[in-house]
Image 1 (cartoon, rainbow, N blue to C red):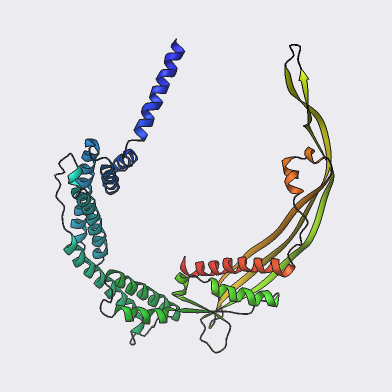
Image 2 (image 1 turned 90 degrees about the vertical axis):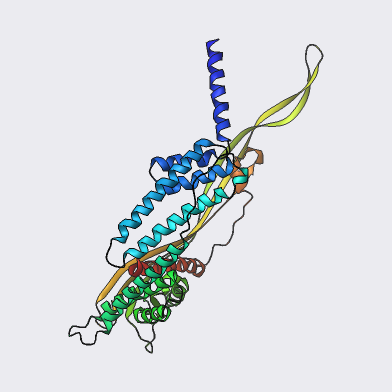
Length: 401
């Protein structure tokens, strides 16, 4: 009896927990509580609002939303007051972030207020309009990045400087300036002449890297160099220009490399006389029992087969060792290496004896036949594709990670 009661209690608990899981807005409510406990009030307000939209009659979620909203509001308003005390313009982008978070909170509240036709509670919070504040701080943030960008340009253009910066420093400063003018555009498109200044700074910051002819297989080398340029990401193109070695263009750095190849030609191995045995139904016979009832009996026997398992494989391995040097000083900037490999593998089987004795593995393999392995050039081309991408990613990482 006690065992029955125990199982009934477990069953009832399971039913109750299942019902809880299917209550609309339960998952969002649970997430909101978790964020609230971690004092992440913005996320708590977000998920509480989502829960209320699914289940507008849950007073616990309503109270959680109110508390999260008010605490998040206080936090961001307090941050703005503290940031306003900073003397320089670096405060404006940070204040812009705070106002945007306030606007997002306001959007959560407004979306709930708009649904009050279906709500059974009184949401007594009043939305605030932050659009004017955001627009004001947006312009101040753009101006801050604009002026900071000009400072990096002025470092280069200071003609009276008795110790002018090195070319490398000039490029670094122009790159910083270009990034800042690009940020200006994100805040206020076409702000002053920021678009022109971005293009000008980017052009002067652009690093031109020429890929010299590798030592190694000539056909593969030319293919890899071409593929590297194709694989260059849009992000890295902003400040890195790749080219195949050409004496007629301006170059900042050179990439020297050597390619080594290893090829393992197609080889077939086999395992013969693999025994297979299985008990199978060979026929059915009718039998009559002592009471005269007729039934069918399966007659089983052991069947056997022998399998020959074939495996064919080949492989191409490539490795590139490289060095990037400064064109003028000939000093080494970066060194490294990348590897790639491409494998071909195929297997099949033949058998003698009773097919029914075969395992599922060999039943599948006997359906396959011998095929031609890829040629050396085909395998090496696949490896070249892989290594080109790896090398391009590694070069980009030197400059932009």
